[in-house]
Length: 271
Image 1: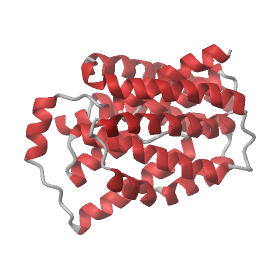
Image 2: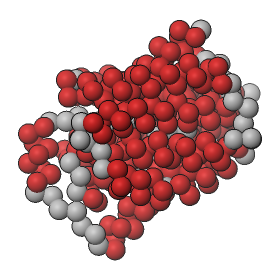
Image 3: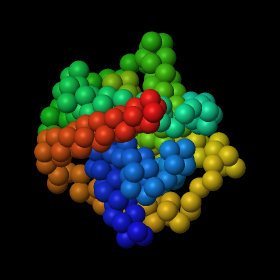
């Protein structure tokens, strides 16, 4: 089982490191349906795995010059309030209802990857990099610090924090477009910086749960170890991956998992 946990962690971490957003959503289904954790414990354990994998990916991107540390930390700190609120709500929700909501989130992520509102946001959301076009787009885009954009940025940061605390996911599929559209980041910088934001939000959400969730540290450590290595490898291999093929495969996987989770959870809710 330890080897299985490491392999699952490698898969989740690799997706997180390569995509920047969306990859961490695999952690909870893996921990609940394969590792056999309860939903509440699984979402808490996911925070450890996701946070460590995101930190590893951020380190890899940092040495590649793709992380803006100060702005990433500010974004994460803004979202810390949402992380605490999400963690508190998680404790009081029926586990099967939580899984139904989680499956809805998976459908949303899959839809966002397939039908993003613009090529710029689509690339940012999925982590699909087309270097030449990204450089052209980024050089022509200036960040706007209007009151409206600042408000949207705060709302996005708080929403990401809430998703992390409530579901145990990173929320990079929201962070990356926000960094691109509101702060004028290049695609690759947004992906790298999003991993720093995820690690901050995960740490805050986990701290708010300590003492209230019984964590199985053996499961967490093996899964997190695999996720850490997988994320580091994923961030290094990002530019070599076939973005479109990776995105399509990941979307199919999300839809299949979401359908299973929704059907299984609704069955338990009505019986």
